[in-house]
Image (tube, rainbow, N blue to C red; front, side, top):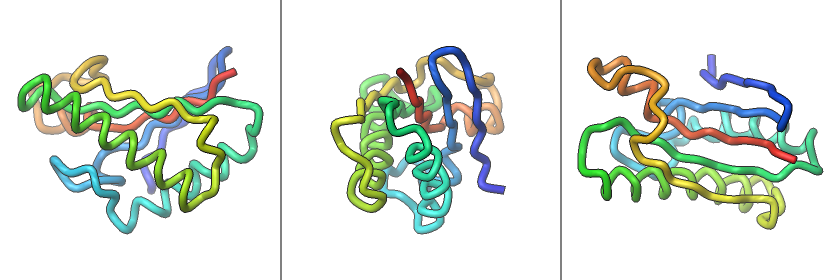
Length: 126
């Protein structure tokens, strides 16, 4: 229901949260309902206290590279700020990254594909 996907690998795990859960289109202020999804993510983070947290924002390919890079970084920062200030996760554990349109997970040729590319990934790494 929340749309969070969890992928585990050797290095740790990656949680992917779609844009529609967290933000309105082209915005970086968290939606009120984002707090539900992020509290679930925070619980998983708390279960892995030794792991570092890499928060990476992504966009689709609409708009300039510079704009998308800035938006993706602002979105990653919004998620990290929520984790730090509302969920009380130690800020020293975080690395914040904005990748703009890099690493698409779907084709940018359709609205559905672009929606999948607009996401925030939270990686728990060693």
